[in-house]
Amino acid sequence: MRCPFCGNDDTQVKDSRPTEDNSAIRRRRFCPACGARFTTFERVQLRELTVVKSGGSREPFDREKLLRSMRIALRKRPVDADRIDRVVNSIVRQLESSGETEIPSSQIGEMVMVHLGTLDKVAYVRYASVYKDFREVTDFNQFVETLRTDAPAG
Image 1 (tube, helix red, strand yellow):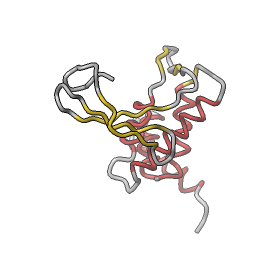
Image 2 (cartoon, helix red, strand yellow):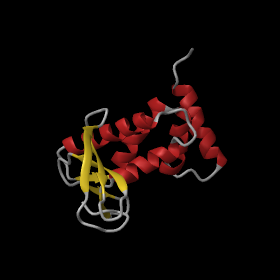
Image 3 (cartoon, rainbow, N blue to C red):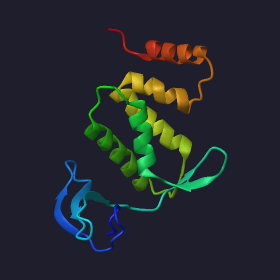
């Protein structure tokens, strides 16, 4: 593996262990050329996924982009980073096991909405504001009102 600091191709693995949810292997590496230490993660990828955007364009599925969008929605919310990672892993597993190689971006967005709805309602509204393209304050009000009417009494 190439060192991200100096570009040396000959790095050494110092420690390998599975992540908590056993979805990846965490490797601590050392570069003998510059002395840097860094971590890599090895994950199983069942198939190459392509995201089909609403405009018809296609791009390779990017797990990190999904993770970033969820972290943005959950910023400053009381949700543990490991829990976010588990949700992302779950979404990726669902997508990979669907049998489809081309996934509409709307399907991914809906999956994120479902998970955020159970994780944190504020993050759910934040994500929805971008995903559903809220333009006015009234868009927020209408969406929050649907949450209130859909919520169980109590």
